[in-house]
Length: 174
Image (cartoon, rainbow, N blue to C red; front, side, top):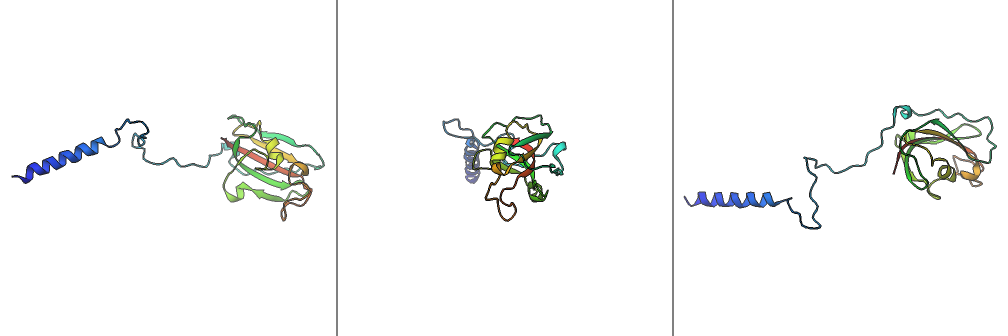
């Protein structure tokens, strides 16, 4: 008979100890997520809007002699507007302006590219050409060599003094 009261006492102590877990309101104590959500937040790749769901075909201009950045919205976005210095997540295709040869594309890697729009983070043509876009937009950037890789180029894919054409799809802004 003495075993039964001990078992009841042990079960009661265990139940009280378990009930006390997670109910603290003491300063500095963070409670676990509620409503059964025990999965940690995992960053996800933004899903592109339908207008940006396929890789664009880049149209090379007839002349690549402009010394100024030229921007043209191909699809006007409706989401948040990018401000200078913000971090963006984009899909893009880059081609050499003189030949139309593709030198890089996030589409080939099947992964958007995220970058802060700051000098040294990306080429000046992006720093100047992407602010003002809205999420969900697609913009063409015709970038003179001076705002791209300049006299040095970026061997082996981008020769020295190469103007570039990018089509950039804005997926998100942080």
